[in-house]
Image (cartoon, rainbow, N blue to C red; front, side):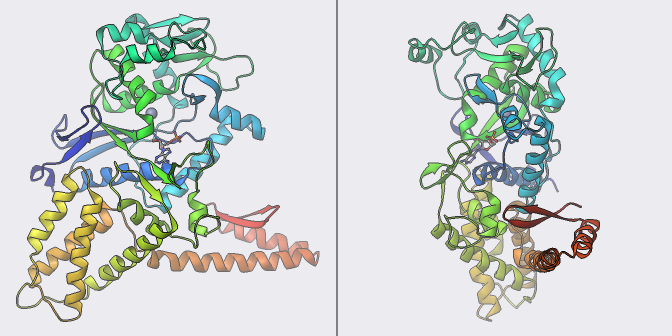
Amino acid sequence: MQLFKEHELKVTNSLSGKKEVFKPIKEGYVGMYVCGPTVYSNVHLGNCRTFMSFDMIFRYFKHLGYKVRYVRNITDAGHLENDADEGEDKIAKKAKLEQIEPMEVVQRYTVDFHETIKKLNLLPPSIEPTATGHIIEQIEIIKEILDKGFAYVVNGSVYFDVVTFNESNDYGKLSGRKLEDMIANTRELTAQGEKKNPQDFALWKKAEPQHIMRWPSPWGDGFPGWHLECTAMSTKYLGENFDIHGGGMDLKFPHHECEIAQAEARCGQTPVNYWLHANMLTLNGKKMSKSTGNNIYPSEMFSGENDILSKPFSPSVVRFFMMQAHYTSILDLSNDALLASEKGYTKLMEAMGSLDGLNGGNNSDFEVMAWKANCYAAMNDDFNTPILIAHLFEAVKHINLIKEGKEQLIKKDLELLKATMNSFVYDVLGLIDSAANQDDSASLEGVVQLLINLRNQARENKDFATSDTIRDELLALGIQLKDGKDGTTFSIVS
Ligand code: AMP
Ligand code: ZN
């Protein structure tokens, strides 16, 4: 159903700082690119919030009947520790630390990312390209930017010339900065090294002999700059001008600003019509971040093994908690807020559970059509999920009254209520009834733990035939045991 024809959707465009009516380049189609994770460690809940915000946006576009091509990349090279093109590649650093191949680091944390977001019920994107899979495209873009005179080569590295670009373009338009101010603020600093100006950024960096992630290029062995990969992958799959580019608020500058500069330097046109930025998840009032250690990992939250929260919280409750905040607002994670979300989530799911059993009556005590229009109005107003949830709870109140025999709805209205609740709760907000799913996983966990205990006993008794049989038979069933210093854990491998 082409619902988009009946709805005017407004989105907050970071380029204008305003809410704008969304008009796709091609009617009925949406091209959306979202910066994916840098896979050098486990994703934390803050990362998950950003990806979940765009999952909700993806879901709503699909719900409206758009054909969406959603591209979310995996950053597996080029992201240095420092935004000013300094420091080590995050993945190479981890590989050195653990004495493994960079691609082993990438594989481990890509798997973790996929497993985590699956638990949080994120839909897979249409394309999930990797930076290392697009080195050739990145080199081609650098050549084009060099040809256009917006970049220069120094000692095997290529830098984007921000000052030259700014003469005919507006560097800083996304983040609301002026190049003159940036230059004035950094005049005292001499750390620019090979760059003509500290604001210039690397398109290609020469690999020093010790740098393990390296590729041949016309400028010698090296690796691409972080901003370039997103320009290469977004334009390859969505075209030189596409509808939506998203990411966390912290990526606005320099990452997205540089993406705009690269694409404009290369093609002479703006790459993206709507820039959408999701706001940060904070913990104790501070941004959740891997590098500062102020974070909580999803697995710690689901298992309850952490010093921050009083109990475990299921992925569904976490998802509900995040959907209760608008994606452009800061959200602070706290035990009390999660407990309140858990209550709300349970109440909503109980009402969803009783919805199917309700029967139509002789008249309608609740204006379902008007209520449905309010739900859409909330989502059409820049994906306002907290307002949508308030409307869903209005319906919960009526569902409970109908259940108690204190209100009624004629059959047609009841059917509309059921269909609308199902659409918004499950399809758009992406909530799942965890009670139904949890039972299976809880009993599987119990059974595997029992077998781990029996295996431990067998090992203590030096009955290695039995302990090996338990391990091998479990593996044949797709359950892998891992012996670590803190005991045995298991993972599902197939
Ligand atoms: P990274 O893996 O560091 O490249 O980050 C992946 C995504 O998570 C980016 O879009 C970031 O903007 C986003 N992100 C990082 N920290 C947070 C946070 N505390 N809250 C919400 N999003 C975040
Ligand atoms: Zn990016």
